[in-house]
Length: 221
Image (tube, rainbow, N blue to C red; front, top):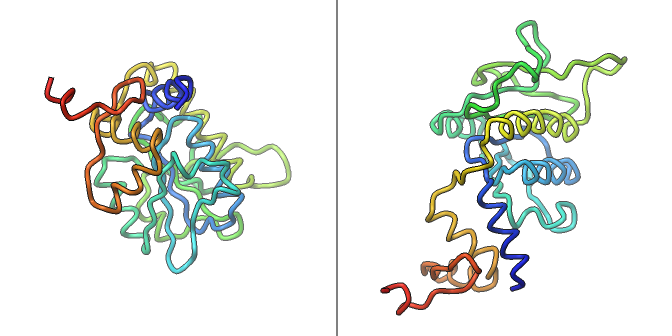
């Protein structure tokens, strides 16, 4: 693999934000899913969540521009399962929802572990989700419309989180573990081999920072 490609992968992994994520409820349109996933990737989010229920929710190569290879989508059949997962991981959950207690997204401290919940444009976020959230947030609007397209809204909020974290130096130090870094680097550099090894239930070989596989003899040195 070209060294520039490997360097790009390493740079991306070094900036992954483990304590910032998005949860989507009833966001089924492929172009919205893809747009949100691509924005998440661009601000350093490597893992996102969705309440799937009985609906088919997936990222495809056609709509996501390849992002599905680098952003993991976790699906949950029930709202409770998805929300409890975020809570157990220590996330403070912010719902994009118009209410009397809602605050501007610009007033949120996104340097803290944050999960942003977005819903379908017509139905919005369900009461079941709202029962779990810590704070409703809104994007101030000055026109006739009360809301934005879900992927646009997610992008605006995520780039505010990016701005705050960039200023706080969150992208200057790797957050993911060394084990995850090496595993992801191999998976991205050697996707076919990674798929075969995963199917066999075998561990990935170690790689150096040049994207080269380290032999068993080198591992012992």
